[in-house]
Length: 257
Image 1 (cartoon, rainbow, N blue to C red):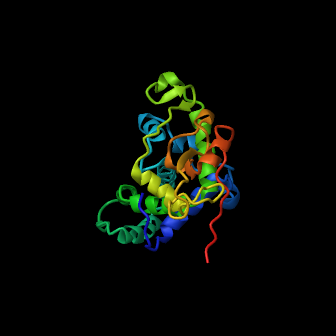
Image 2: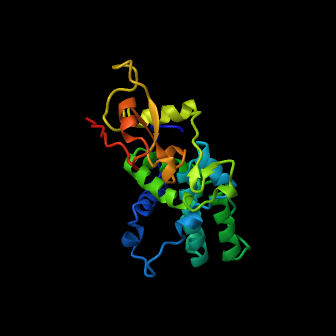
Image 3: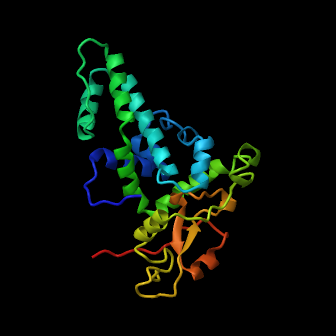
C-alpha cells in the first residue's frame, strides 16, 4: 500500500467522491436518478467468489474497496459507451493520454466497434485511478467502517460449506493474524502512530511500553473481514475494552496545523 505526494487526477477524485456517496448511501439522492436505483447493486459490485473470499480472509494490497470501485467504474464506462456515439471518444481520449496509453484513431470502424475498443483499453489500464481513489478514501476511518458494514451484510449470507477453508461458520470469516509488515505500516501511517481510539502513542517514540494491536472494526463474528479496510490499530487497553462487542471505528482525530 503506497503513499505518495503526487497530485491525484480529477478522474480519481471523481471515483473517490462517487464511492464515498455509495458507501454513505447518498449517491441516488445526489445524482437524482429517475428510477431511484444505482447502475448496479452492491451484490453485483462485490461477488464473493473464490477470489474475493480469499481477499476477505487474507489481507491484500488490492482490497475489497479496490474491487468495489473497479466494478462501478467499469459499469459506468460501459453504460456511457452504450448510450453515446461521438461523445464517448472525446471523453476517453484525455484519460488515455493521461495514462499514456497508445490508441489508434478511428478511420473505418463503426462508432459501436471503435467505442468498445476505447472502452476495453481504458478498463484494462485504469488501475492508476482506482489506486489513487483508494489512497484518497482510506484515510477516512469512519468511511472504512461504513464500507465494512456494507460488506458484512454480504458476508453474513455466505454458508460455511461454500468455502470451508476460509469460513469458521456460516457468515464468519476465519481470523488471520499473521499480519504483513506492509499492512501494519499502512495502518500506523494512517493513525499517525497513535491508538485510533484514545490517541496514545504506539510508535515507540514517546511511550515504549505501549503495544500495537490490530483490531477488526466490524468483528468477524458480525460479518467482518480481515481486509485492510476493516482494520485499525488500538492500544492494548482500548482493544480489550472493545473486544467483539460492537462495530466501531476509533474516534481519535488528528489535528493538522
